[in-house]
Length: 166
Image 1 (cartoon, one colour):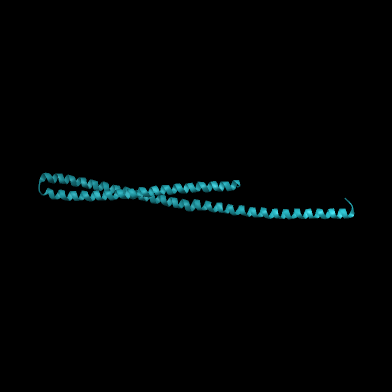
Image 2: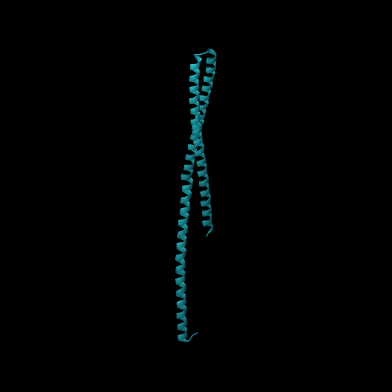
C-alpha cells in the first residue's frame, strides 16, 4: 500500500469520525429540544391550573373581603407564573431555533466539505489506476523486448557455430 493510499485511508477514517461526532451532537440537540418542549407543555399546564385557581379566588371574593384580598394575591401570583411559563416557552423556542441552525450548519458542512473531499479522493484513485495500467503496459513491452533479444542471441550463436567463428 503506498503512502498516498495510506493518507487517503487516514483522511477517510478521520472524516468518518467527524461525521459520527456530528451525528451524536445532532442527536443530543434533538433530545434537548424534546425536553424543552416537554418543559413548555408542563409550564402551560401550570399556567392553566393557575388561571383556574384565580377564577376560584374571584368567586370566593364575593363571599368575604378578607378572602377577596387573598384571592387577588393568588391571581397576581398566577399571572407571574403564567409570565414565567411564557418565558420558558420562549426559551424553548429559542433552543429549538438554535438546534435547527446547528443541524443546518452540519448539513452544509457535509454537503460542502465532506462531499468535495470524497470527490478529490475518488479523482486520486482514478489517477493511481491510470498510472498502474501504464506501468503494466510498459512491463509487458519490456518483457517482449527481452524475449526478442534472447531469440536474436540464439540466432547469432547458430550463425557463429555454422561459420565456425566462435
